Image (cartoon, rainbow, N blue to C red):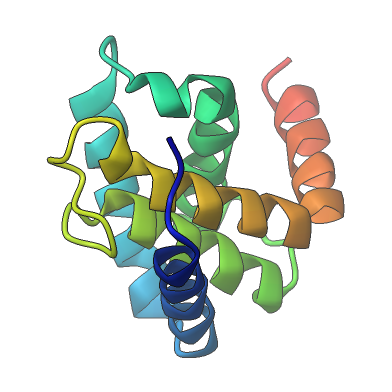
Length: 135
């Protein structure tokens, strides 16, 4: 059971368009929405997201830390991509609405994976910063 190629293409296009148009206000909104979505799903993570759950939480933490000014080392392109992926994840009505069991999160998985590939190095630096600043 997978996402059809046309829906996958649309999900990537929405993500890319959102990243291109991201601004500071959008990052702050994504941070709030992402935190709310994490809280809503905590303890009942959809199966399709389980392997990525720690990465999703890290992406949300990154935009939250950037939005509050505690982490500023990542380049804007990374922040825009991460905020766009978080906003996509947090939106219940994206290419495949989240209310559709299992399938509703497949497009979110695609967007998250695309984002992770784009920001891999910067995310590793953020994780290292987080570990050292919370020790």
